[in-house]
Length: 67
Image 1 (tube, helix red, strand yellow):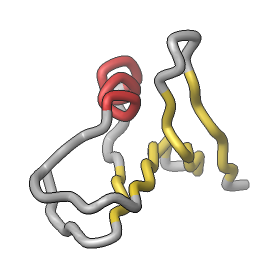
Image 2: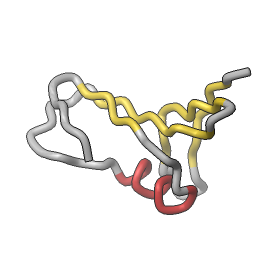
Image 3: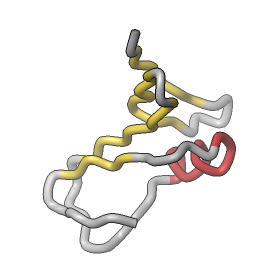
């Protein structure tokens, strides 16, 4: 069964959603602010460095790219 979690460290680094399925864990960060260039928020960057998920998502209001 798929599940959704929230992740935060003691230092207040956070990821908005963690989607857990049989295929693994996908961190999802949601940003409504305008993006002018590629940017990975520090909480998501921290999660990626520590847990090395296969993929991660940043959902924005106006910016579309793939890293």
